[in-house]
Image 1: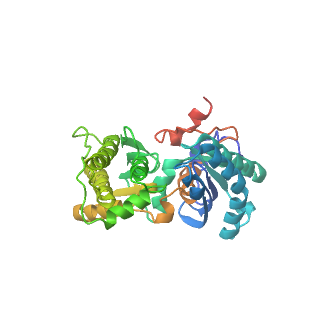
Image 2: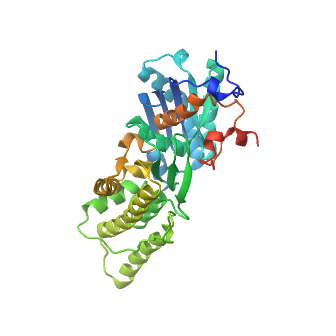
Image 3: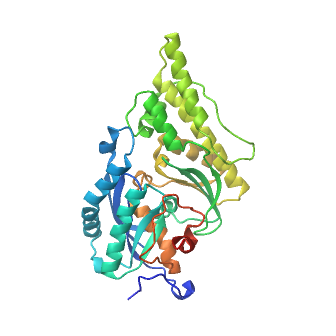
Amino acid sequence: MTTINHISESPSTLKQEHSLILAIETSCDETSVAVVRDGKQVLSNMVSSQIDIHRRFGGVVPEIASRKHVDSITLMIEQAVEEAGIKLEELDAIAVTQGPGLVGALIVGVMAAKSLSLALQIPIIGTHHIAGHIYANRLISELHYPCIALVVSGGHTEIVYMESEGSFRLIGRTRDDAVGEAYDKVARAIGLPYPGGPHVDRLAMEAKKAVELPRSWLAPDSYDFSFSGLKSAVLNALNQSQMKGEPLDHGELARGFQESVIDVLVEKSMRAVKEYGAKQLLLCGGVAANKGLRAALTARSEADGVELVIPPFQYCTDNAAMIGAAAHLKWKQGAFDSLDFNVHPSFSLEKWMGQELEDKQ
């Protein structure tokens, strides 16, 4: 039986490729449990969304999210195991999102994972949420290194350089709003419901013309992003149209906003691929479901001869299958956690594979 205490032996003596991992994801407003074999075969992936609950508030209410996770986590675990057609005793490890995310929501998932780990006497693996989004791509394709990952979600907009498996170097990040945040704020401004991203995307794809809006490129060699100015430009356009008494077509405004966002995301990602000699470009995160972004990246990648990997829609938004895929990296190294590890609401992706040092601080 594998010890559940932190592994102190040399990881090389513990390396093994095959795993059957039950993964738990509760970083925000989705309760998800999955069973993943060998980091790439999804046997089950159950997701319970809270969107309808939080929509009335125009965004996620942390306290409500935590309570809903408590209400559903046990049932989700039971359903994931049943759907996978396995018994709990067959599991090799439990993986759980350790961060980043809402602290109360993370605690619910971590406590459930610790309980299972203790009851089954199998290892537990604290897993980084963004690493999960990145390795969701491995559920559909082998990854070839070095590669570049464009991470776009409600709370993150980053370009990550990966020289080898499990190595993460942030070369660009947002300086203010994440892409998903900007979409939600623009949607609210033009009267669209939460979450705003899909609604803005739909309007943009349907519009025949676009309102011209600025692009924020920052310094010529920068891979960072800034979307607060673009959000302000949208608000200014709406205010000016109201003052002039001239109605502004919301579809054309949505298209102008989306084209501005996509131009910057695509251009900086492709520049990073060329500068770092990447073999692949990976699209990751909830905004990876955006049809406009997927189409633009696909067209540009084909034109530039770059291999692009985009996960299917069910693996773009928060889900536990991606956590199982990322946790397999640590399984192979025998890098397990002790039962006293903590959640990390602001978890460093670059330090995740060496996180043992952080847990004791």
